[in-house]
Length: 285
Ligand SMILES: Nc1ncnc2c1ncn2[C@@H]1O[C@H](COP(=O)(O)OP(=O)(O)OP(=O)(O)O)[C@@H](O)[C@H]1O
Image (tube, rainbow, N blue to C red; front, side, top):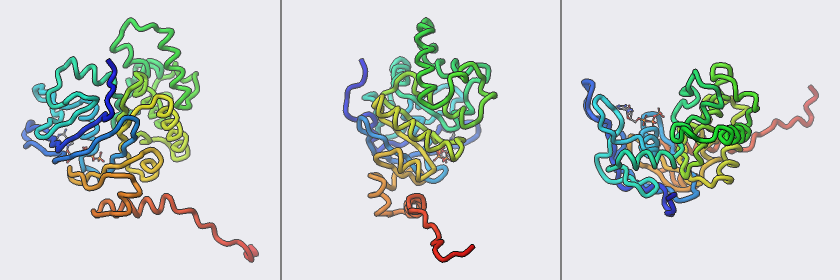
């Protein structure tokens, strides 16, 4: 049964560590984080490099706690993390597989992670066939074409291979791939990474259009204040694995109680300030 609750992500005092191994000590990536994402809400996740954003995103996407030998996936060692009603701390493989069906994950550098021997269409449709190998190919082709169109790529690209398209186009293909299963929750780690500055606006428009069409909730990491401002309803700010800000972007920036947030406020001011054009009147050049 699809998830029907109001809170799609509920982190309660959650502490997450990478286990010891390969001659390394255990590393605590997140420490006592409490936040929730409501149904239909787009939550931004910001913070300086190494603050734990990608770790949190990967955990929310279900990549947590598998205790395989030599594995360095993060483990929940304290508190709780519930995603679509499932407690991830004690997630069994079948429940994990159901969860990953409903959570679309766009990992960091997703465009680079496309399968090189698969066409664009095969890359986008792959998550469907991986779960339902007998899925009607014609119907899948229709879904792939629809998504390709939604991310504003030409249909002729369906038969091309990742190395034949640009990095920005690959990122859009990855976005389409992460949405093919019509997720309830979309977890996106730097969705505009590698997308050319001029194409970023259209990609953000596309994401917002897809969201209003499919009504998914989202957790979106971005280094860019403009992306966060445009896409998200609220932001969570991480610093050294701790949550140091949470709320609407304007509220968080108005009360910058942390140096990183102060820096962000300055960047945001620059991004949103109207461009001052020089007064050309009387200029006789
Ligand atoms: N596989 C791993 N094993 C051990 N430690 C790791 C592993 N991956 C990340 N870390 C550490 O966990 C902390 C959080 O890393 P994470 O990648 O989540 O940060 P981030 O905020 O996403 O950074 P960036 O913005 O650079 O992507 C860092 O100190 C990092 O070095």
